[in-house]
Structures are given as structure tokens and as C-alpha cells.
Image (tube, rainbow, N blue to C red; front, side, top):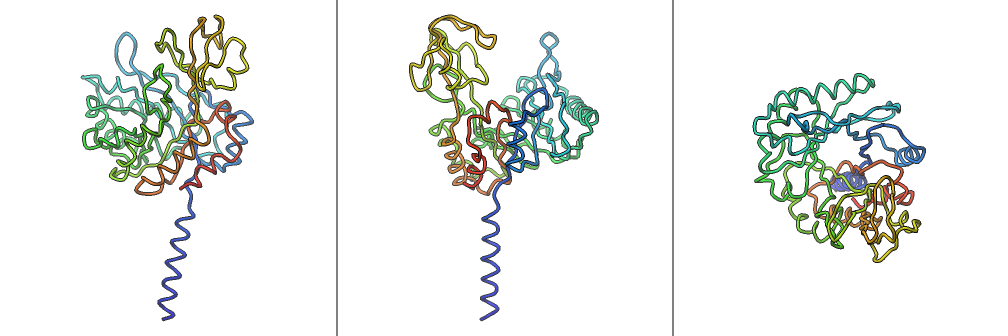
Length: 334
């Protein structure tokens, strides 16, 4: 009898410990110069952040010759020794759509450039992440690229995964990586309507049930950014980064006409962009309530608990939108 009670107690303790293990907090760093503001340092310290996913460079196409080239590589001006650095390479889908793409050469050059940046900045990386919104037409090149890159790098490899790639994984296939990161944002179309393209619960709902069937382990990327959708004559003419409601309320050239819309009262330049009289700016933001809702719905639908929540992205402008313990509040939902 005592032996049985002891076994039950052990099982209870093991279960309690596993339930108390919350995901760790990490951040994406998406600026071309790696340097922290005091606010950013404060947030990293308060949240015991040990890992940063740093965008090293994009891979796009040469505008004239139509072959792959690295774009805007990161420059380090901050000591990275306190953190585990995961290089992230964003590969534009149009690169993977090239009919005669030399996948092996691209994989080798991509890895070599990552190593060059690491060597210059005395960084040792045990993991690399590839970010690409591949499509049915580009999947063959992309999946082959991942295979070759993995064999060359001999490091842990992760890849970003979009919601549509989860729901239709039998068609889009699953890259041969060690783990995926579900990008739980950019769900809708950037349009002149009143919907939020960054996060829309009704859109998310169409994909959530698919998560239980997805065979690759997924960690999560959640959004903390905002932007303005610039509209003229009911047509979107551009996205304006680092723009929020608070900023426009303080600008006399703009007037609020709706909960998310601002009208340009008189033509003006703002942050180098020309706004014509009667243009509209639609502000798309993520509230703390949105973040908690995301966490709750993901916790209900993921087949296993994520090990990590990566917030996109570490930037003082984004951090100023949230109360001090918001990131702890979010991970406590899991």
C-alpha cells in the first residue's frame, strides 16, 4: 500500500513540475544595426532573456541580372556575449521561384556569409533559422535548399512556418528542420477596409484546429509591432512602419475619424513621407488583450506546449506600447 501511495505521489510531483514549466521569452531583432537602447536593455534584463533571433541579411534578386544577392547585412555595435545569438536569414519567395536556381550554390554562399559575420563579431551560433514564405510553386527549390543547407551547416536548423503552411501541410510539405516557429501574425490582406491584417481572431480561427495535426514541433512568434496603412482614393499606397494612434493624436495635421482611421487635414510631410489632404491612415496595432487572447487560443490548440515564445520585434518604439510585465502575462497562459 505504501509503495502504491509513493508511486502516486511521484507521478503527481512529476505532473506538477511539467505543468509549471513555462515557455522562455525571446525576441527577434530585425534592425540592420545591432545596438540596444536603455529601454531595450531594461526589458531584456527584466524578462531574463537569454536568446535573440537576429536578422543577419535578406536574400533577394539583383534588380538587373536576376540572380540571388544578400541584402542589408546586419552590423554589430553591441557586445553579444550575454546572449545566445541565432542568425535568421529571410529568403524572398521570388528567389525560390527561379526556374534555374542553383540551390547548392545558394545554400553554400548563405552559410559562408553567416559564418563570415559570426567570425568578424566573435559569435558562435549553434542554431540557424531560415525565414521564407514558400509557396506550392517554390516548394521544390525551398525544400531542397533546406536539405542542402542542413547538411552543410551541421547545426540545429529551424524554420518559420505560416498558418496556411500548417493547414495545408500535405500540399506545401514540411521542411526537414529540427523545429518550426509559427508566425502568428500577418494573417490578412493589407487593405483599405477596417480589418487588422496583423491579427484577426476570425481569420485565426480558420486555422487553429489544424495545429493539432501538424507533425513538427512548433514554438511561437507573436507580434508586438504596429504600422499605418496609407490610403489614397480608397487604394493602399504604402505601409508606414513605427506608427501608432498615440503619435497621430498629437499631430495637428491628422484627425481621428474612426477607432483606427485618421484623415489628413492638410498636406504635409511626416518622417519623409508626403501625405496629401484627405489621405487616410489606418493604424493596425496589437493590444495587450490581443496578445493574451492569442496565447489562450494557441494553448488550447497546440498538440504540445511551446518551449519558447519569440516576440517580434525588439524595438523601443514597440516596447513602449506595453506595461512592464506583459511578456510574463503572455507566457503564463501556457
